[in-house]
Length: 382
Length: 111
View (cartoon, rainbow over the protein chains, first blue to last red):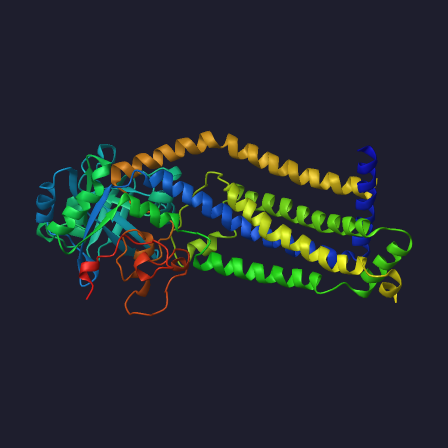
């Protein structure tokens, strides 16, 4: 064992020496390899963490939401829908929700205005009062006890007293929320009680009965679109999934770049490398020794790139809040939640990443070496 | 120092960094648990349905509630307007290969 270890140590020594002889080329390759793994691992970590946060939070989302659709567009739900829905056996806590969007011209940001439901006693707001998300407080530089001025779409100025700022810890879900009373909400958007609600939320006594309740809703309200909690969770399962837009684009570019590297390696050895193998064989190295040396070369480069790429990706996503990917997430938005993600690493994705990078690279290194190593040294050196 | 020693020390350093990060993940769990509980309470009380991750357009702010024509916005086959629209899968009703972004399609409303 000791002898074997010593032999491997000498092989590694020799391999590193050979790599250092072509320092510039090999360092550049290591840097690109590490960067590719860093990029892919960053996206993987961010996606897993976001999916985890979404699942943890949205497990408490309304069990069933009922929307009215008119000409394929989301429209207000008539007030009598609440009564109709309350006739369904198994449906409970039926309440019309009021929420909508408001573009604040003063700062160029979109807010979500919402009326807290009656059961949210901690978040109750009276006429002229407002509870705002942390990002809005930062953007408008408002503190608790201060005033938030909003110009309604009809041009009326609303002066609302900030009674509370939602905690920064919940920013991922509440950054852009503006909670106001129903009277203020209807006055702000010029809505009468007869106009109805944005949508209607309800819970189902027995979760096994959700499909039955959904069927009943679609029978009673033919223009309704029903969204269950399962649908919401499934939606967020797909955010940042491997198949989607920018992730796929990044993955494809990275893999193409990597394939070029692997192809460059596999397409043949340089004359210098070929001569080196010839000399090694001429001085008594066996084919297995040459292959072992090259296996160490591929393995060491891969191990360095993977370990440092993955470690840097973890630091990037969980210690520096994915600062390099934030502009992609932010898009053209002015309001962006300042959140820190729970470190969740999807081991299966990490192992997959290791397999799709390390194995092809190592094989690409070995094939031409094996071809050269089984050829007569005299021909190889010539 | 032999080259092999230097290389192994560097690899050891990288592995130690990974180990430290895994400890960081474990130790920051308690802090994140408290934050998650606070967020979950807010979601339950207010009946929130979506993350406030993308605020640039209405259909990405509430992706689970966006209407069925969302990816096309105002005209069929028009291009996606906003960058964040590229981060989520298109609705399931758009095809077998699309993800399940949206709620179930209302088939009876189809022409």
